[in-house]
Image (cartoon, rainbow, N blue to C red; front, side, top):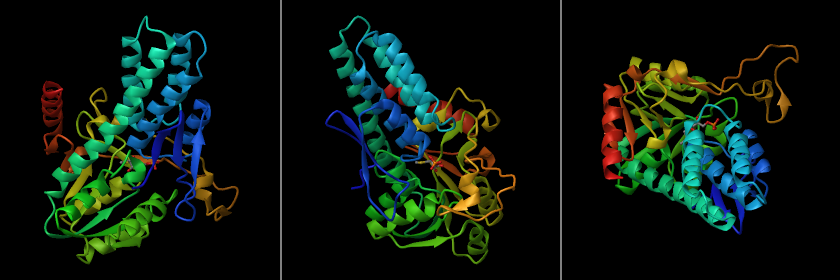
Length: 346
Ligand code: MRU
């Protein structure tokens, strides 16, 4: 089992994803500010994993709190909210912690700390369960033999465990399906080459690594049956923000008449966000583009664009795979229906 993020002995433990696949190093955080910096630096990344880490980070910050819990709590939440802007799971997790904090009004610091840790643990467990459930629903969409193209890393490393897009692949294999994977390397940060390839090789899943610009050719040759990706934020109309390059793959899938599936828990759906136009796209440092493996590959003077995500319009999405089932267009209505059913059950 890959341990992406964990609470252990009053500390948060992260596998340092920047060092994979060469080295498996676990870092122990006892200071919430350093943990927030770890999110910024991509020690941990992937929308659900960021949310879970922030929840544990808030619990950790409250362990450090000595006086004025209200002000301390607000400061900790602000610190995590300012780490990365696009993945809504981060803001969703902070909102859950805020709600739980508000419910402890009048309680002593020990009770507040216990409540914060309990809520963070619940967020962690729920994410693992959601991935299992959406994996099960998504796997049913796949034929007995299937070649899946995936982008970035939407695996155990991007979540509390099991993964979203890779969760669907894992579940399909558990259902006895023959699944092979084409993983795009995902420039500039190489989440596909470093992380998805590592996870799948470790699990014994047949995986072929391709550079991002090989996807069209593989599709034209008939070597891809469907595309499955994760998401950082899904707007109320079904537009999907995900790792830069996702939109291109969606357009290619449409041109080759291939299903384009997005696998994500409900914590990635942002009902407050009307459309993809309203999603803030993070701009990452230029060095991620000008350098490769720590070595400069572009002239020092060149201008660089480095948006970490793009937006795929809902019309390119064949289906959204969630822990409450699979939905198809019209997404606005289907997303509302999904939440209504979810809230009734809760
Ligand atoms: O910049 P990253 O590595 O945090 O981006 C991650 C992605 O884009 C993933 O596809 C997304 O978070 C879904 S993870 C289940």
